[in-house]
Length: 341
Image (cartoon, rainbow, N blue to C red):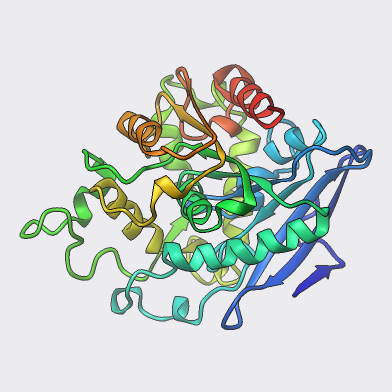
């Protein structure tokens, strides 16, 4: 069931695009936020679904109302109807009741198979809305992991799969996972880790970004207005953000648990079941994905229609929000060329 939101949750503007917001019913009372951005002049380009990563929701990630802040608009202006979604627990989708309890007393919330259910409901809506049989999907970091999982479960619905700065199920060093590992049982989460959900302030949302920028003045690498709006939009999407000081965004930690398992070689899905055309994009300075992820995915996608890999030289994890000369332009070139193939 889909319900259109008459007053958009977060207004953005463009003379050449239309935006519509929806709520899609998933399961167990979960309502998923979906935004459609499409050119006013309709063409027959493949629809594209974009999915956020482990902290900021879809609007903050992909549709900021600033020049250079909306990858959604860039793709839509080339003719694609572009859809954004928030998985349960993120952005404007249903915040789980458990996320008001003590996170240390909870298992990691929102695991990959639950997000796959949300994706399937959204994809069904998109295909009905566009009259198509298949669509293209792109995720950022954890979003790519979720969409790869979905593409292995419903390969019949996905024509193009774009993995952008994504982990892959291959064992290897992953510094972000070291604190989660059980020293007595390598390859497994330590008891109680990582908890049910975490909190992210505006400062922590921007911290990793700033640390990965290889120049002393981050404003020369990214537009400071985009950085500020990214943090503000991500944080204010949580209706309880203002209850903490400073305001903070609650984020489910099932994504961290699953990412740790992938980094230690656990297969949460079967790559051989993916049949789409696949594009693997990795930023050279990415702190999340590893080169071994690109190499392993290229090797494991044995039934994909095609597999292409591209590196964004000197780019960060946030290349799509950085200035054009620091990876953003090259990323858009790769995406538009791949989607038109």
